[in-house]
Length: 198
Length: 146
Image (cartoon, rainbow over all chains, first blue to last red; front, side):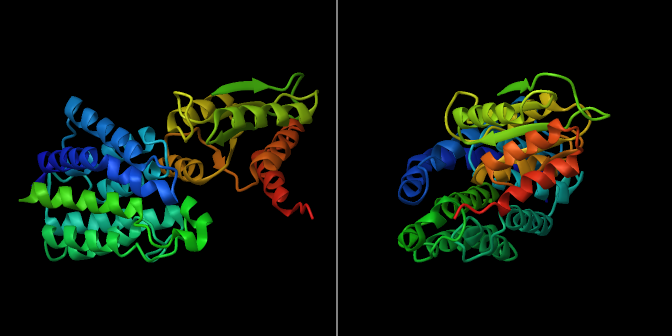
């Protein structure tokens, strides 16, 4: 079973991996985006870590809900409301239970990922974060490692796609050949989850 | 973020609908607010607030500036929120989905930013309610330029 401390460790590990990979995320965001994804995610997750350290929420649901709220407030780009909504919706789905099972985490995240699709009006294949999130959540039924692997493969699979959402969609065919930065950061979140689950 | 009102008195029975303009750019939001207020003319009072860019003056969307702007223009008759691109749209949608972040009656209006802002402020200046203000702004989609 996973308690609030596990979720705090997940958010902290996510912040650390985003910090390490921030330059790469920004590089990926240069040809097809506005070259701020790394910095935006860094700002958002730094705020999340500061918040969970200052007032650690008592339940898994509360950690994710509060983290989502921080992301919406502090990111400044589209990834803020998208990741923020995902975590908030997942947190609400987990309710007030002091501990949750991996399966409950999976269904909570599935609800969060659905909410991302609704908010952005997007689906897998549009070259967005959903291309990593959807396979990641599906593979969570097997293991945390499988989820991290599936999300990473999902991110890599965005390279040949043509973007249909966001700023990259204005580029049409010129968006082909670049890995989607949002799918890449989504894979990092699953990598952080697999890391803390070890 | 800044809030201003057109001068004069409200034309309708109740308080006026507020208008919030959310852009990726502070100067864009400010200028569109000035334009809309200027074209609304005198005689009515419409609280209009610009929430453009990030708090440090950069390009982007700030949930903090948006919630502040919405509270500033809320007179109890609802708030029409107009947005420009990407994260502005998503942030306002996410804030509305939160339930308690924006004032009750705050609504994201699907409208072209500049034309919609003018239509919203002009309509709100007549004392119209939120439905009419939102409808007027949305109708600006139908104005063809060629």
